[in-house]
Amino acid sequence: MKVLPLSIAAMFASAGSGFLQRRLSARALAAAGASITTAGLVLMLATISSSVPYPVLAAATVLIGFGSGVFLPSNTTVILHGQPSDRLGIVNAMRLMLQNTGVVVGTALNLSIITAPLPAVLHDRVFAGTLTGGPIEQLVTGYRWALACTAVISVVNVLACLARGRRS
Image (cartoon, rainbow, N blue to C red; front, top):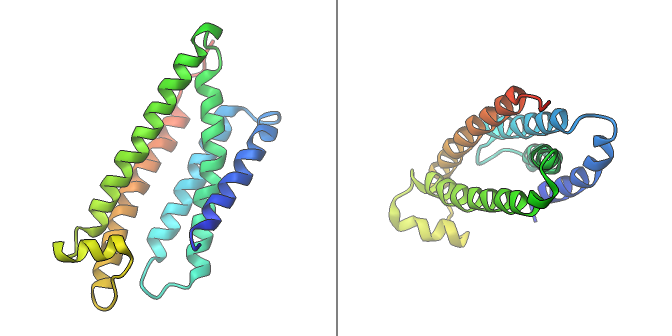
């Protein structure tokens, strides 16, 4: 329930992205969405602790969700624009396969990074959501590491969005 603001923000931003694309270019929106996502990751990285108030984390998750919701449909538009109509299905299938592979690999890597500071015997308790006490600070350290890695990747994404050449 506590990460629900991310999904809600992504849903509203994604729905509004089409409207925004009538006023701004899909490339500009993709770069803006990636930047907003990066800002949310940096906010979470800067504030995460075992005692951070929930509204601060909720604000970060809203930024991440909103940025992703703007980025994904805009980026899809950029990728598919100008493709021959007989290739749209193949190009979109490839895009979805790469996106889903990124989610699966990213989740596995992030969970590995998050649990790295903890002794191996506690990993199952993390995944079950039953970790309590002193090891929480080690878990927060793992979250900081994972957020830092994800924020760096997100910055690279912003730079890639800004560096994309225009199609003639």
